[in-house]
Length: 363
Ligand code: SF4
Image 1 (tube, protein in one colour):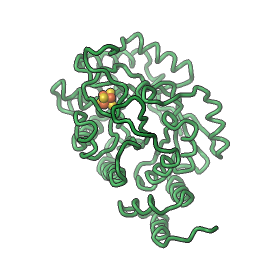
Image 2 (cartoon, rainbow, N blue to C red; image 1 turned 90 degrees about the horizontal axis):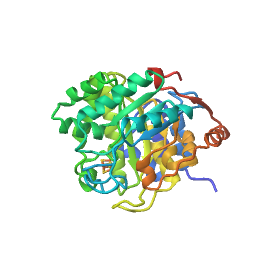
Image 3 (tube, rainbow, N blue to C red; image 1 turned 90 degrees about the vertical axis):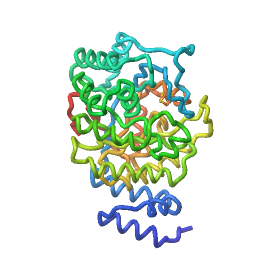
C-alpha cells in the first residue's frame, strides 16, 4: 500500500533541496512523521554536498583507557572505580607503547585516549606521556589526546585557564582533543546524570579555547539514555550553532560522531535502543548539521549494523580494536575487518582508508 504524501514533509524536503536549513520544529516533524525512506533520501542528498555518493572512508583505531579511576560518578558508566577502590589502575608508559605497537601491527594509525577524572594524576603525567608518544612514533600514528571532559577536569585540577592548558598540551605534541564526554548537551541532562562532568557552557568554552590554541577537535553525541526528543534536538542545535561560530577557527569541528549508550552493569540501567532508531537519528543529524562535512557511524556500539548508516547520511566509520569503557557496558568488538569492509561494499560503497596520521587527510 502506498504511503500518503505528507505536505509538511514535502515542504521540508523542498527547503533542504534548495540549500535551506531545518529548524528544531522541522526536526521534530521529520522524526515523528518521515518514513525511513524519506529520511534516508534527504540525508543522502545532504551527504552528496560533501562526498561522492559511493565513497565511504574508515580507519582502524583503538581507544586506550589509561586509567579507570574517576571521581565524576556518572550514573551511566560501568567503567570507573573510585580512588582507593579495588580494581583501579593507571597504565604505565610501557603498557601504552605496547598497545600502540599492536595497533600499528594491525594496520591502524589512530588512537584515542579516554580515562577517568583521576585526582592522583598530575598534568605532568599527561604531558610526559604525550610527549613520549610523539617522540617515539613521530608522524607514523596520530592520537586524540583527551576528551573535552577530561581536558576540563585537568585544567580545573591544575588551576589553569583553558587557554593555558591547551597550550601546555600543544607543547607536549598534542594535535587533537576530541569532543568526547558530550553525551547529551543540555544542562538538565547533565544535572540528572553527570553533575560533576561540567556544564554545557563550560564544555563549549573549553572547546573554543582548544581551537584557538591551534589544536583540532570534533563533535560527539551519545543517545539512548532517558533523553527526550527535545534534548536530542537541542544537542544538534547547539552543535550547529557552535560550528557556525568556530568554523573559521582552525577548521572548526572536523566531524560528528554519534554512538549509543550501553546499559549493562551501569547504575542507570535501561534497555538499548534499536539499530533502526540509531539510523534514523544518524539521518536526522546529517540533515541538521549542514555545516559539518564528516558524519561518522559507530561500529563500536552498533557493529555491522552501523554500516547501514552509510545509507542514512554517514560517510565515515572506524574499525575499533579496543575500548574498555563501552565493552564494560556491553559493547562487543570484531577484528574481522574484511567481513565488515565486504559488508560496506555489499551496500554499494567503496571503502577507502582515511589517514589522520601525518596530519594529512588524504581523502
Ligand atoms: S563516563 Fe567518564 S567521567 Fe563519567 S564516571 Fe565514567 S570515566 Fe568518569
